[in-house]
Image 1 (cartoon, rainbow, N blue to C red):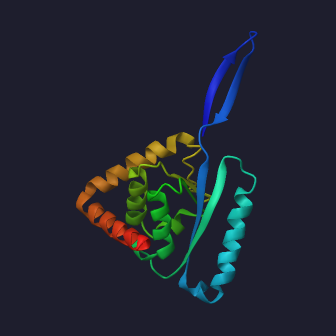
Image 2 (cartoon, helix red, strand yellow):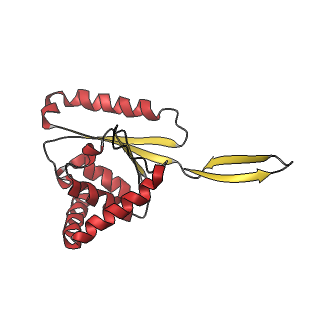
Image 3 (cartoon, rainbow, N blue to C red):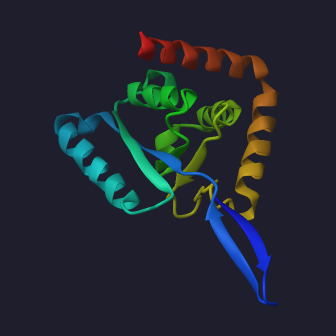
Length: 180
């Protein structure tokens, strides 16, 4: 994210770009249960993948890689996702990077609720995915993705606010267990 300023000195207009924040990035991966036997190799691979991806990026600092190897589809049942969300709540993370949005949530309900949860936090959380056809990047924010996502998520949550409230309570209950 850049702040742009135009400086006019000797009649020459210059656009100066400077970073207004450093992103504390968390890489997240959700692998199927069948990866359990080679879990350590998978974790090592994904750690290296995200380290290589963010190595040398001045505005991006890789804080951690969170890998869930589970058959659980619900976010509240994924320990590494809960640990990641706890780090978001505590301000340790302000950007989630993942290869596909499917790693974040198994269905639209969970995906929209997750985004709504992240958008509600005091620390703004950026989302970056590498999906070929459904690429999300709220840092660069092409075509006002952030605003469009926020609007879509709010519309979805407003269909059943009590269900979202229950989901959110379950997530916070799991986050509190991380701190125990």
